[in-house]
Length: 178
Image (tube, rainbow, N blue to C red; front, top):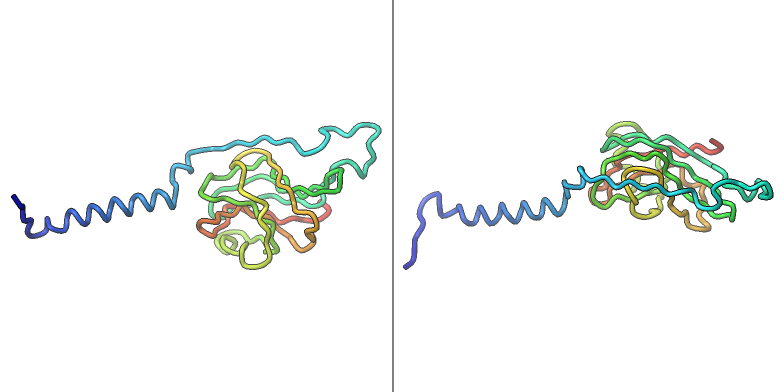
């Protein structure tokens, strides 16, 4: 037996299929459940936790630049620091980070100026930038190795960047000599 559907009901099944597919794609793309998931990271600064009496000042970690994170697309607070470690390598340290979780979040060093409000949301991938990797957690203290040979004087800011939507969750200017 074949049932023939007439009128407005003949569009109900195709519309329901399209709605289910659109919902699935939307959930995959936006990952809204991450807004309620927090990942807290508590990393110590690489190297000795406290300088010993025998350690030279050059071997101790030294902050070269730092700045306070400001909010862009999502409320973001904390401090970003560029630190020269005892062995001569560099790390970007995020301290007391607190931002929203989201899909495909990255940490970028950039040459873009940090602007408040909407003007600052989408500028960090326009010029020179280097990705230091995926954000390890949306809360806490974390370290990101800066590639050897990178000319740090060319990078003046850091952004918590959502690669999926090309938008900054938050950013900090890196003031030298802070």
